Length: 269
Ligand code: KIV
Image (cartoon, rainbow, N blue to C red; front, side, top):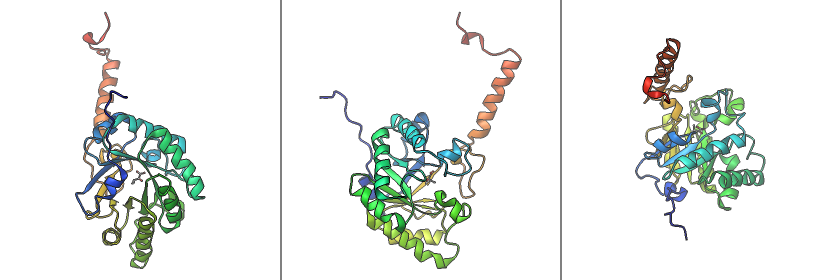
């Protein structure tokens, strides 16, 4: 018998049960030590494929490989104890068939020890969400502005500006909820559409650039910390780490140049 008490994390069913309750707090994280800080405050942490853009300088999430998601997923699981860890399935790893999605989702779950996966798409992904959920893989869905569809959407465009499209977005949300998704990210949609989606489904909606009335909110950590040079308009900046890092790096560079580094008590005698 192990002498260590097992780690008790928040589970996907516990997140699902928060529909209409206390707002769900979530952030992305891609690094063990920042995830350890986020873990104190977040109900779930998403290892999102936005890491391709905010950590690896890509223009979109399309080029993110599965192995990179697994590598960052492992780091975040290692750094955390309490939050549910959700790992994004990157573009090209799940759309082709439910069987392909299961193989790749199972790899993510086995290799990272995360508690759930997320994938993008509404009604067209319902069969896959059912297939995974019925086989032990909790799935968070993602509708509205789905960044992996940037090429068919013609850019990162707010969805639902035209009311005629609302019914399709609401049907997408209902389809993934009925298929067994435990929660639903609603990204980049006009506020009233986000509110209607929240009212239409019995699973929690997690808003990003959507509405304060969603059941929870998520932000990309690097965006809210001021570490991404291309922050989306809707993001409130809570930290100013870009300039703070620049101050630290330029201070160090000056000291190296004028030979005042290292300080005398910083060297081995
Ligand atoms: O990849 C990501 O960071 C996401 C969030 C925007 C929800 O999917």
